[in-house]
Image 1: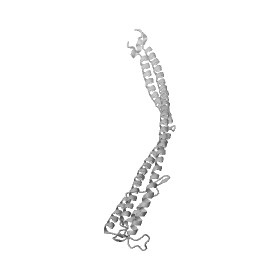
Image 2: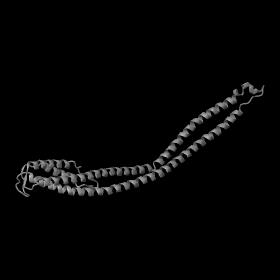
Image 3: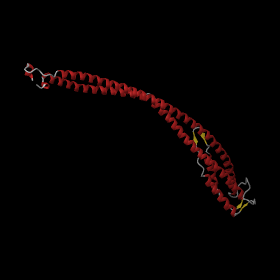
Image 4: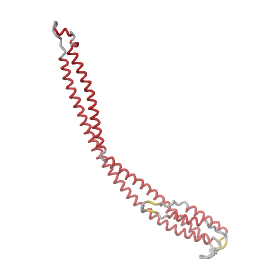
Length: 283
């Protein structure tokens, strides 16, 4: 007789198959529940404030870097302006000296042509100046803007052939004396502005050094926090994953042992009844 067709054998196999199927469902539910708990614990570790602290330090560093770029840009403008102030002073002095070289109190046609050309050149040089900048706790005093105002006043005057009034003549005969007075003012201010701008440039150099030092300190703090904090965080996450992984494996192993014992019992119900036995009636 085929023992697999015995009533007890078939019942045991059906029962064992049902138990396995039921466990697979329950094990899946248990596993999903444990994984959700694992992910919750991991998220708590990730939300321990390290990321926020790192983000705060990075924002401070980036702000310093932006400020440093702004200061260096301002330095470049100041350096350019200092050089141009010197050029303006030189050209103004040359124009004054050439205006009435023979000192006869009369401007000739050639002298007028040269003076008007010089004033135009100086006007153009003034408007090459970078406009004034401001910075937290710093200002260049609007020197570029002030010089532009002088340039506009100069541009409104025109030299003519004829009398060069003595200083203080009122009313003036023409614009000749006013032009020389304006050039003298521009020369004096250009000299002062060039020196002032150079001092401001040098002062910003120290500010750049200070910002660089602060940035370096933040970079070091970030590096230290990132390496130690993330290493600790990864270690905690690994511990959580190992703990839940071992728990899931333990549950699975327990079922495998239980299922193996049940399989042995099922196998034990499968036997050959003696020929002629009454058990053959049920076969």
